[in-house]
Image (cartoon, rainbow, N blue to C red):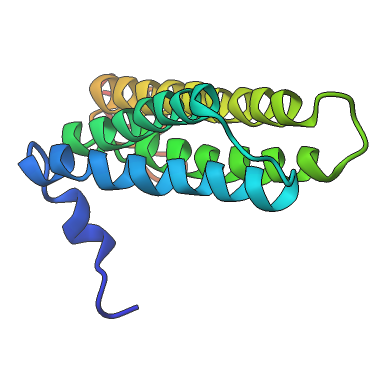
Length: 157
């Protein structure tokens, strides 16, 4: 995909476009919720359903665009993957013979999304700690930085 460059997307740290992009993303997520409910459940949603979907869509888009705004690439990636996987699980549960398909699908999809969100935050945190502790390099025990049989590194003589 030549027309879209992921690297340039994350070079826009602290850019207002991330904040402006929250509303269109929330509208897309809300539309997906409405379409899946209408198509798979043959449900005619009422106002309460629409408000719940809108609330969830705004939360998800705020989390995703917030991570993009802050430049947290790993958390952004895991959250985006979690949103897609959660919507997929929600659609799968909608097609299964379970009681209360609508709420069961929505809750299970949100649980998977929140799981990916939390994994993304933890992976981002561990990556930050690794960079802070080891200066972005992989871990090598003291004295093992040189070639075999040679002493080297910070603690070698």
